[in-house]
Image (tube, rainbow, N blue to C red; front, side, top):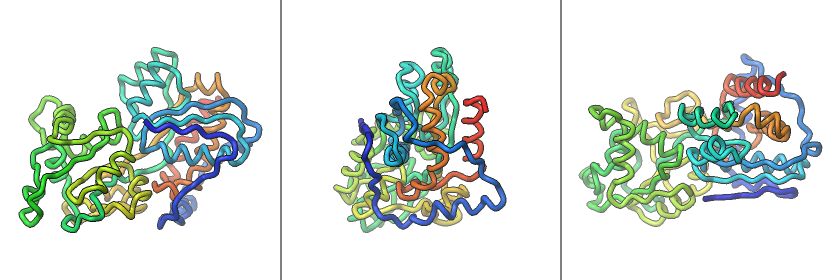
Length: 339
């Protein structure tokens, strides 16, 4: 589990990225759609601590916003735990011990029921867009792209050596690295790449998930940095995680394109937002009106988050949500605040 406690004086630290100007470009659509402006939040005036847990994918984005919040004057303590989306909803809904959930997938019906049983009606806030990165080691000199079907076959163990994928590839064992089953990234990958291989199963998603979990030699971790280290260590390894972790380790990893049938698509700010990259997905945070009422600092932080997320998202390595999506998130917050 990754855990970061952010206190006064912490500055944002981000590598120089080729996406630096992208956040400004993403707001160009504001000429057609007017962004909603939330009431100004003064971090100096906000008191009380914040507890956030959930997705390892959303973790670096929330961490960057929290650091900015602190840098602009917030003197409380923000704890951000990276435990996977499922673990985040469990702590928020069942244990009712956190204020905000980081999530790389929408909340499930069972999780909503668990929340409501504890008097928490979850509210969704879209904060950005991720393009799931399929990566191999920078030492891999034979692979540039794969189809979704090939990815599914690889991660469900239907093929176990690279020459079974393509006869021109080395006859070497494929080394698999995947987020664990508590991860929203795992859920998303299973739905998009593994489940379609089980059309006759009563539950294709469950069948796909089971196949990935028992694939020969697969290494699972909720810590994406562990996956990075494993993949970069062998030219025959392959794995997947949020785009930010590729950006952070681009010198050691090679990003693969995905052959969607009409050409190979590489994730970037355009293909992620327009949906042409087949493994693009929305990123969220969640809270509840009861939490925001009980702890006003939660509403203040979410307001600051939605207002400032596009100032840091490119540096983190993700892509901005559309103005429409951010407007809906802001409307959800205003409704929770009774405004």
